[in-house]
Image (cartoon, rainbow, N blue to C red):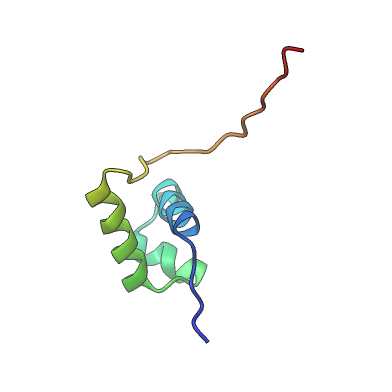
Amino acid sequence: MVNRVSREVWFERVAAAERAGCSAQQWCLDNGVQPRQFYRWRERFAREGVAPEPGTTFLPVYVLSLH
């Protein structure tokens, strides 16, 4: 069985590693992520111009009704 992880999960992993302040190799070791896959996804995001910036955080967005 193939365990496929979504693009969104990989984006969050790359962002978390950038925020962690340690090397990517160490972050992968600490989080049970294969470094080869991590580097592949990080490069893919960089080529596409969507690589997260260091310190990027995601905030919840609430939509208020004007009714």
